[in-house]
Amino acid sequence: MPGLSPTDLLGYAASLLVGLSLLMADIRRLRVINLAGCLLFVAYGFLIEAYPVAAMNLFGAGVNLYYLWRLRSQAP
Image (tube, rainbow, N blue to C red; front, side, top):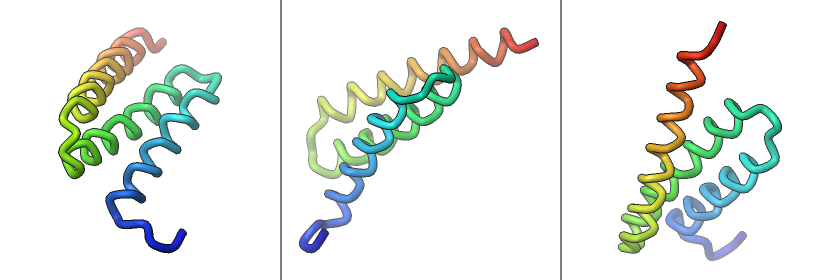
């Protein structure tokens, strides 16, 4: 994609990961991939000075971490 800045690429990568996470049947894999997408969106939001984007995705990352911790605690 000619003409895309590194910031644009970061935004597209974040979108791709969040979108891919929604295709996962395994909840643990969904949470891990979604967490990565959220963290990329946090960086993207700060880079473009869209602080609501960064804040919402920071919250989403926290939710994913919480549920990953709960899944880890429930593992046999």
